Image (cartoon, rainbow, N blue to C red; front, side, top):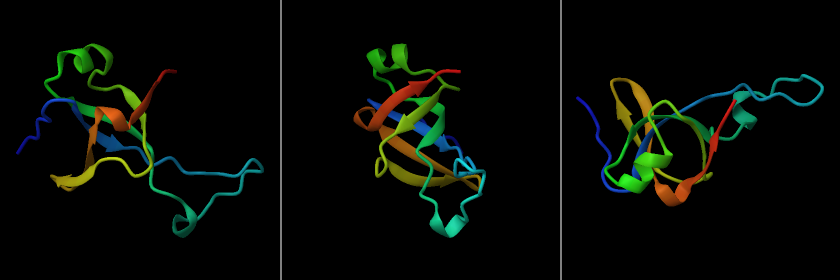
Length: 90
């Protein structure tokens, strides 16, 4: 099965980054928040959005943004354009 987002929505795979304190202490799973960084899997049909966001981009999204979906054992999010805060560059 495949998911194709519509209009101004983006399908994102959240990236779990192991959070550490500045002194190098790893924060346990029970204390960390859900990831807010993700890799774009698919972009909706909005032409303006497709010019700005591409598949494979790494984005920062709103803390409580998007709807969670499960596809082939992966947890994904469908996020609206207004919940995308930034495109991250290396």
